[in-house]
Length: 278
Image (cartoon, rainbow, N blue to C red):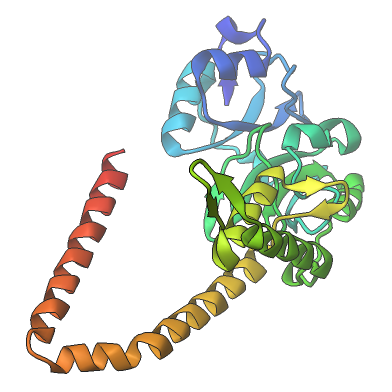
């Protein structure tokens, strides 16, 4: 991308903030030499810089900085390399990107993050989670050090930390049986379902305590969700099966069943419409 003279005196971070660009700057090619685009970098006329973002944001940045280049310097691996790395280290999970100081420690920059099936651009306040796949750009000599720091172990992100999982579950069960006094001499309990849910929300917000990570890896999280849903539906079916059959076979059962279907569909459509409108 060719630079425009008006931007020469401003660092990239100031330009990105002033123009409201939702982009990530990768590497810069200047006079045949490659370097990472730091936030303090000031571009000069003739520089080529890689910009990562949506097509609309890239068009905005290109129109302001200069013009698009046919040379794809992001594919050049002669000096800088790029690869996808699994986040599996407890030291990294639960921390913000700007707190990791990857640029200063390794001369590296994260240009993309893939969580589950979603790809998005990172920012300094993004909190990494176990199982994230990040695209890292750095010098050849630093790639192994960055991989060790982030973990890069698929096996590690497939396992559940028994200590944090059982500890959080025990705290949730303890909260569930703890009576909470209310005005009028009434006591309230979260129960065995509400207690773990409240504790999970609190610990998930905290993220980590020292080396203890309270977030489950994505794969383990999805597996436990499916198992929990199956057990929940099995319990509901076992308890309500007989009464459902007897009600359905009696007079008016079909009407009640049809009314329940209509109300459930209307509630789902209303929630979908509200979520889409907001």
